[in-house]
Length: 311
Image (tube, rainbow, N blue to C red; front, side):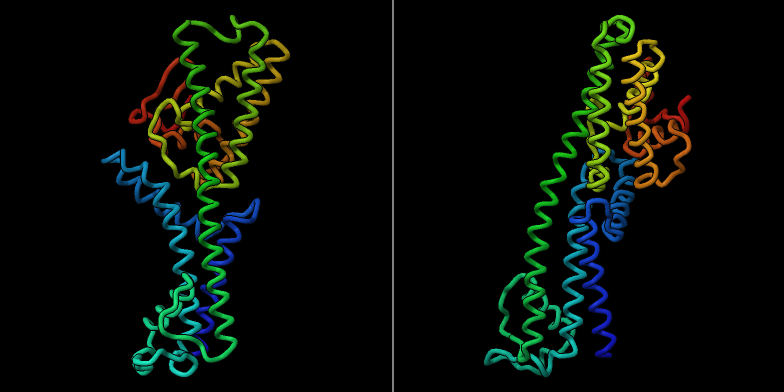
């Protein structure tokens, strides 16, 4: 049993450390456990949101807390299993504490938690290797705390960028409708700068979301800042720019179309888990997943009437 406890403990510690590295430090990696945790939390909240839509705004924060908690739990239990076979022989206790009552699993958890948060609990290791092991756990605990805070602070610029891109598209769409103006027909030779700017912003956002996939699970709840709702309009905007005939507009429209295509491929592969062949199907699925109305150039499709495919 001692060997089994040791092997399981090592495995849990390695799973936690590998997932932390893949999620927080690897520029192109995604942690399998963290991705799975975020997806499960999102699915649970998404089902409840069919009845109570407002609850979906808590999916992202709860997902982050669940991921951090899973890392801490794997580390805590992993080191506890490493200590467990040695609780009766390799630990000394303060006077008044009966060692015979501190040999079980929960006592090992107690020892592991004390090391993880660097809190003394009336016991200490006899051997140097156990002291080194507890020191390593303390370092991991401190690193987990600081890395988690840094990760949390890094996510909010991605959310701000996503909302900014969506609001720019929403304002442009609203301006066209209110003034009854076709921007490619009536707005002169500066239109390509606007379209190219949207392409650059969307490309940058795509790369940020690839680096921080947890940002997908943050629900906005505001139609004017929901990218899932305005992305179909950007797709149409790219097609209109290409069809406008002016070389500069065609160039900008092609760039925006490429940015939209790269973005929806990321959505399909990483988040929606659907085939990447049909861009309109992906756009529709994204809007439904995020409970957003689909904004098009000449119409807005409400979420509840969102069909399975956009023509």
